[in-house]
Length: 216
Image 1 (cartoon, rainbow, N blue to C red):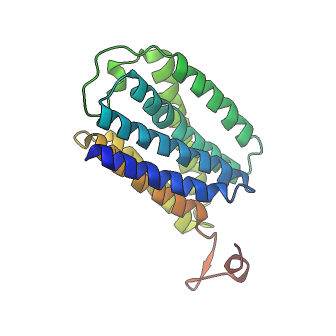
Image 2 (image 1 turned 30 degrees about the horizontal axis):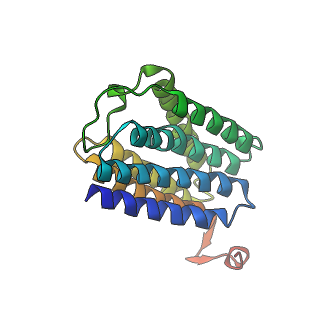
């Protein structure tokens, strides 16, 4: 069941990432699209690990996409939305660093057949776990700070973005939910984030303003 949930979550996140790529003329949408693509890869790694039993390969892919890339890219997209011109350059540079760390990090220990492997059992603290902690804290802080700063202009969209981050964190962070819970959290988080990204900036009497109503 966990493998099926992981596969379904990967499809949901990948489909929504594709929709955001169609809006890539806006820099924040392009960065957010890559963040949802990373979610899709993480969910795919869950499906891989649960179906074929976890090993260093599946764990490395899961950790790279889920722990090292997703939240920082979400944060970079929020910074781009806030008007930081170099957010895309920073995101690209960090993604290269994270990919290098993920490829080079030594993975040790025996893996259980099922259940997402705890990082502390298979990775040294530095550099991978240290980088993941710092990047996730900064990325999440950027998402929340930008959402709160512009909450009056985008009350619905920003609320959904914060809920999406919380849903994904809950799925992977609450003990007892296991790999299936993490997959459900990724799918719910991706759906909420996508809805928040594309939500209109302003509402008037329950209807879009004329300029937004005509937006593709």
